[in-house]
Amino acid sequence: MKTRVGIAAIWAMAVAGTASASAAAPVPPVDMDVLHVQVILDHLGFSPGVLDGRPGQSLTAALEAFQESRGIPETGKIDRQTIWALHPYAHWRPVVRIALTEEMLAGPFVSPFPRDPEAQAKLPAMAYRNAIEKLAERFHTKPQVLVALNSYETRVKVGAVLRFPNAVPDSTDYPASLDPEWRRTLAGLNVEAKVPEAAEVVVDKSEKTLSVYDADGRRVAMFSATMGSEHDPLPIGTWKIQGASYNPKFHYNPQLFWDVSDAKRKLLLPAGPNGPVGVVWLDLSKPHYGIHGTPAPETIGRAESHGCIRLTNWDVARLSLMVKPGTPAIFQE
Image (spheres, rainbow, N blue to C red):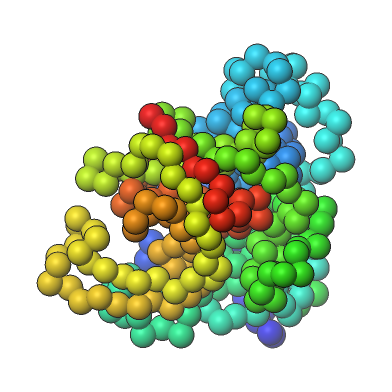
């Protein structure tokens, strides 16, 4: 790819046409101390959501889960005891400098990205809008943060060295039994390959989190989640994960959505990271319900869903490596 477009221009294209008018507003400089904490938590599996160097509810939830796992007061703050508990992992620096490769900048891209399902069904893929959106998701962040970490004059081209939040995994040695295309997706999302095995997952409505517990009952991972709404409440109870669909197409059925007219026709939307369910669907024993990804990672924990449990694409991909068919999924208030 021989593009020489400036990072700021591509960022502007990335947010053009989004629902939030504030999305294109300038962002303040990244707080590197906060980003460092976020990066460590992300590596440990206590996901703070988007790596942006800013406090918020996802970081608070990640801190509380980490603190609980280390037996220190669950303050949800970056206090002295928490800093000491994080210190052994300080080798994961907050930022990495990486030279862009052809693979990192390769499409396909879809811009402008249509909102209408009828138009989406005609796309070859629910792909990223541009290279900056792809890079942002690869490093567990958003385009605005890439602008803040680099200069407005930064050129997006093969060989250019950019600063990214350090979401680079220690291992990408994914199980050989997985489909090669799915392994490429995992690598493209910087998903850590060495993960604990889940004995059960617990979705907590009040905390807006999905936690992973091992066979000894220890919480070994936590992800902020979007779950349910007034019209489609979270189905409280105990279910099972029945299997995974990787890079799934989406069967759009208007009869399953309260806010869509039943007169609309059913559609099959192509696969892609910007599809309604993102990069993976973990099917549940509750009909029509699943745990899946999202095309809008910054909305996790802040928006509503049609009853399903929604995580960032990188978090649900990591979760998919932890669970297996039959893993219990407990949904609680």
